[in-house]
Length: 343
Image (cartoon, rainbow, N blue to C red):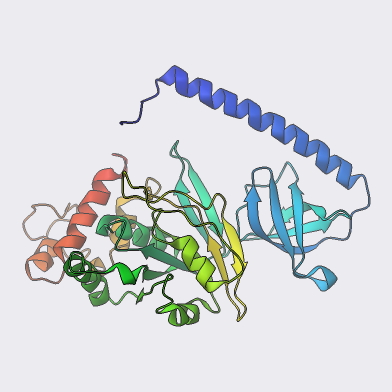
């Protein structure tokens, strides 16, 4: 069934109701903060946001006797929006709670547009984005390439991860090998694992150690199963594929940070079926296709659109096999999805 389109008045009413609810929640939170700050709070110290729950966050203490302890913290009203992975200054209460005083500078942030097109950070201080896909639901190069553009734009190292390798069979093997061959030729780091059978998991652990990683990928590719395999005892809920659509059902409801025993951290984010790139420009998209780097600026015309123009360096490279048709198709599809002002 097609999604029902909301008219302007309906959208306005929904936003108005959501705004009123947010205002009431903020008022309750402000009273809670005032009550805490009027009591006996401990000294300021640094902490790490490991989960976000609307107007409150879970903070892990990083100093002294509070190191490793988890506190549900309130936010002062003048703070910017916090996300999992943020480092903060906070003051502990005496009931397992506390108040966040300030946000510390971010080394990096992974962002995506929300439903209204406004840019929204989803994870902070990440240095590796793990792009998870699987034989089922069927992987699409365009979605993978969107993640790669987003990673390049954010300055975050990508790792391609084919999960559920045990589901590779005669029906999907040829298409999967063709898909993976393109990324291997581009020298992207790529692993094949099976969270269900355990194959390749030790190699994955080595790739994650020492990094702050975030798992992204459409629902149903097994991100929660990977977390369970990497961190026994965490027991992240696992969802099955929808029998009707063959797509995944959402399980994770909030981004959460986990620690690996040997070092390194993992941020598990909610499933994202489509990763919007409304916040990037044409130049950003071109920068996200690494095989274009040495070719850009070499076209006969400065304003070349890389479509049908004579003397186009990209089209020549496509004819010569130095750019794969799969990647050029993704590039054009992504450009076509950008707002007209950026295209």
